[in-house]
Image: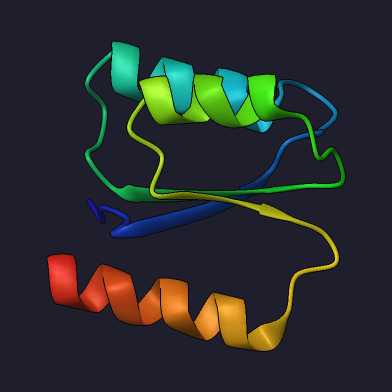
Length: 79
């Protein structure tokens, strides 16, 4: 059994959205892993919903490498 410390997901996926994934994991208390959502949508309502489910960050594509480095460094500091 392995538990993830960090989940990076796209907002738009074939079976369920990244927000639905986050909602399911948090709602069922499956994991308290850090979540980063990547999106092509610069829509504040998506970011608001992500925040409600304790998402660490919401990054709009294209994502800069430096932004990802900062996020992963932030995860290490919080754990």
